[in-house]
Structure formats: C-alpha cells, structure tokens
Length: 326
Image 1 (cartoon, rainbow, N blue to C red):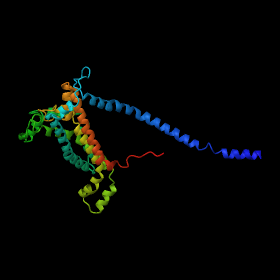
Image 2 (image 1 turned 180 degrees about the horizontal axis):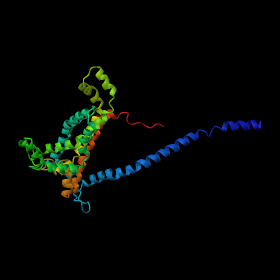
Image 3 (image 1 turned 90 degrees about the vertical axis):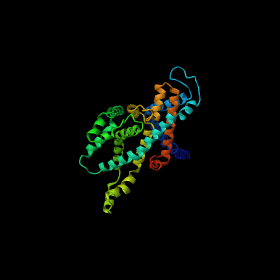
Image 4 (image 1 turned 120 degrees about the horizontal axis):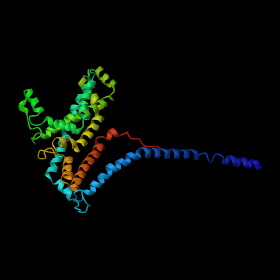
C-alpha cells in the first residue's frame, strides 16, 4: 500500500515542472532580442538624440530670447521673434520663393524625370552611358556645382558667348542680377542638379513593373503610350509619391545651392527660409531671431510631412509594418 501511494504521488507530481521550461526559454529569447535591438539601435538613437532632438529643443528655447550668441541668455522676450519674422515682408517673400520651387519641382522636374526614365528603360544602345551622364550632376558637390554655374552665368561670360555663337545673342540677360528672372535661373540650375536623382529613382521603380503586364498589353493591341499610361505609370505611383515627398521637403529646406549662387540676392529675390535664417542668425549675430525662423521652418516641414504621410502615403504604407505576436 505504501509503495502504491508513493508511486501515485510520484506520478501526479512528475509533470508539474515541465510547463516552466518553454516559458523560461521564451523569456530568455525575448531578453536576448531586446539586448540585440539595444546594441544595434542604441548608437544610432544616441546620435539622433544628440544631433537632431537636442538642437531642435535648444533652438525652441533660444527663440524666446533676444540673444546674439555670446554670453548668458537672459533677455526673455516671449513670442516677439516669431511676430517679427511673420510680419517681415522679406521672410514672407522667402516662404513664397520656397513654395515657388516646390510647385515647379512637381510640375516641371517630375514629368521630365518620368519621361527620360521611360525612354532609358527601353532597350537602347548606350543607355548605360546616358544613365551615368544624367546622374553625374547629382553626385557633384553643391558648392562645386554652384560655383561652376556662377562663373558660367557671369555677364558676357561663357554662357552668353555660347548664345552669341549660335546666333541667339539677343537672349543674353543678367542671369544672376536681374530680379525678374534670377529665381527662374536658380530653378533651372536646381533642375539640372537634381533631376538625375529623380530619373534613377524612377528607373529603380520601373524594375518592379512586371514585364508580363506590358506583354499582355501589347498582345491586346495597346500602343507603347497606352501601356505607359494605363499600366506602367499606375504601378509607378508609389515611387512617384515618395519622390514628390522628398522633393517637397528638399524644396522647403533649400539653402546650399541658393547661398552659393546668389547669396539670396539680388535684393532678396532668391531668399529662402533657410538662407534668411543663416543671414540673420549668423551673419547679423541675432541667434535668438534666427532660432525662431528655424523653428518656423521646422514646424512647416513637420506639418507637411505628417499630412503627406497621413493622406498621400497612407495607402503605400499599409501592410509595410508588421506587429509582433506573443
């Protein structure tokens, strides 16, 4: 009887510890994953906090003070810097210049890049060479490209001499000194500089378009233009929307090319929000006011980015993120 009871007790007590092993293994596996995530993402997160979040917070703090960048920060003026910026006609015109570049980038650069990408996506002799040539301006430094164009567009410079040599001398202008055309000149330089990136981006997107669909369209009697309009371009939509997002954000934050070529002149005809910020914040030692302009630029870019992702990129982002289970 004693042995039977002991055996029964052993049988009933035996399986009890077994469920703890999978739970312990899951816990240790989850802990290792967290450590791996911390090791890989930690340095990048620290850099992001140190060089993005902290400067944004400091700029927001400085924007409430009248400060020249030297000495202690004591002269608190509240929202005066923001009122000054938003009531300054030069800054308001700078916002208009940024919006001008935004609109023209979408209306001019986009169709040009799509058209060239569609042509280079066909089987042409030397298309690799043309792809390289088109992409070269994008890989050039903005300073090098800007100084080169500044020298080319000098009065009676190489570009004017070229116009005279082909019988178009009457088209000569003060390309960088005439306030009526200088913004168009800057946009032409920006198009030359950045359209190559858009073309390469669209060419990459075209590689994801199934060749079977184009073949089916040709079998059904569709012309090349009809195939591009009804098959290729709709499937290229996500790439176009991503490019538009990058182009608009870049246009809102435009600085380097404008600063090198015109410095924001003549008479503020090419001033952008970023060049206005640098001019007042650093050249005139009004760091508090420049910080307010930086915050305004940050808010405009952030609001646009959030709205664009909410209403334009929402369909493209659906299903791209997965949720952990367990």
